[in-house]
Length: 280
Image 1 (tube, rainbow, N blue to C red):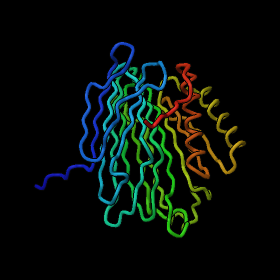
Image 2 (cartoon, one colour):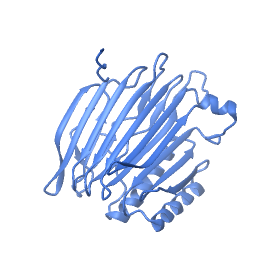
Image 3 (cartoon, one colour):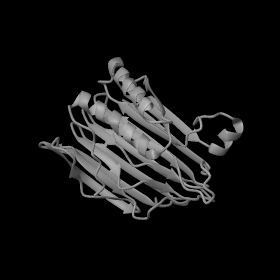
């Protein structure tokens, strides 16, 4: 039997509380993934870890693995140093597997920079979350088309994003999103309604209730009035949580919107402010 090929990049990060701060108790990397020394964005004790890809981009056949575990009572914010760039993939898609594990009372904010899919790019991402019912997860994603030589938008072939959240071995959230711009245009589905960028924010937390969902909806409505071309909405999940989906004209507008929603959730739950993501 032929052994499986080693991943292009792999990163393991296990975090646990130590006194008033959360620290890394296990850290491992190989290939084209690294993590910078953590820094603190405020005085809450939450570390911010920045994931780095020294290779600069994902190519056809690349496979990346990211494992983050937050032990009971721990808290962390994980982001990336820059956008994830997926270039032409003529033979095989670029793949990324993200596995997140949250113990009782753990908090994880996973807020990477935007995913940029360039001409003829095919990208598949699978995110699996195993979390205690008392834990808190906030995860964001922005997808944007990359530059094409003739300036035409939507020149990537496919972006597939699958997210599954499990509690006590049972799937409580399953989000399966696939963007195929050329096929959607031919079929006239109009999924992006003429927009070029898509933003999503998933929040799973026992404190999410109808009143909080209504507050998020009010924030989104105000953003639509303020930003031309922005369309967005929020839905409750079967488990305690919510998902925000937004269509817009650019990644900056959508990133700002998702951070505004994150700030609202933070203020509601801990009195903290908008995360000031420093990439150094």
